[in-house]
Image (cartoon, rainbow, N blue to C red; front, side, top):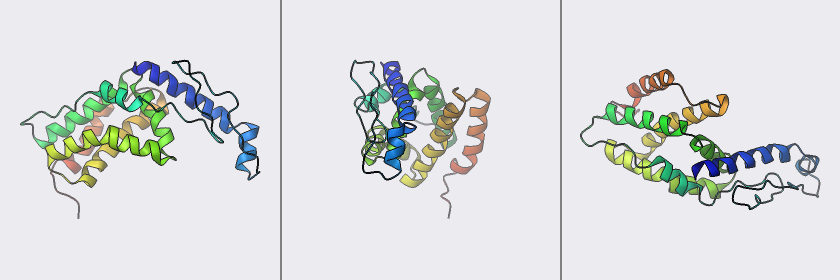
Length: 192
């Protein structure tokens, strides 16, 4: 199921790039009263067409967050593990999940839309990130801003690598990411 959503996300992204360079969109961006649109939105795997938009078609959001939650499963927060073990296992776990076929693509598809649209941003924040953030906050006894920064650095770096190379981060680089992050976060001391 997640590969179908990933395929939809890839179709949306491809249509977005084509739409953004179309003459209708260029006219719309130049301030003309005539708004451009994606004339032929892509046909998604479920047989529906992607929604039309003046600048870019919106990605198929409905159902992606529950599918991502299902693909990710519960956070690997082992009781009795120390801070460094918890953080290391979280980074390695999300790296492995992002590397699974379709998961990185699905993440990318929903993040692209969330950059400029508060509705999917809210869905991602409350529906996808919050369950993991709250579990990690509780396990580490850290404030929200520290846990969000941990998530931003780990997940952002992993998704950036996937987006820039088309490949998940290599194990040696995940090891280096863990080694870089642990000194900052594992002590539990919040920066002044």
